[in-house]
Image (tube, rainbow, N blue to C red; front, side):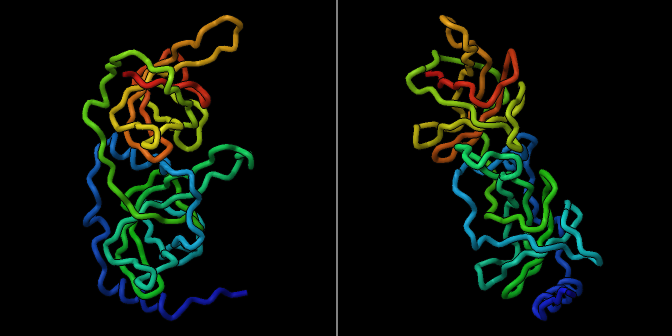
Length: 252
């Protein structure tokens, strides 16, 4: 069956082609570490709302399901849903492939961020300001917020003793990876609800599952950003790969 295109979308495409907005104007200038934080998973455990605007295609002469930084994307919402020209949004996708249904945390991936360059009542066109991964048809969008990274996070300077009364766990690395090394990023199951703040330092430990042996020191990490129950940390040093399930103890 041949797919039809709505009149409103045709009018939007026509108006866009005749009055194009510079696709690079207004793109945020982020440092390397700010970009890494922006590309990190959202620090929330809730699924995207069912009515979240979605990527439905690209302005092209052929139908495609995968998109990148050079594409102009079609978004399934417009001014009637509160979207406005110039707004920026994260593009995200729920982690489902290869994840057990009973897993405690699945989260989502951040594929990049976009900016609306044309919009009408029901549809919008967006330029890709930055791509963290391949964007695909059906990915959802959420408002973009530029990250604020605390000072001195690049330096490995552990201070204070680990507080084992407030111990947490490593959940996963970026893109749902189960391990990360020095300079890598991992999510931990502690956030603002547990008093975690950006810039806090954590010691990383592992239970080597040997009778009578204490927790083994693995490395150090610093908190870059926080959600209510999750925090994104950067591994500043490690003697081995940091694994999902490792323990983290705040340095006081």
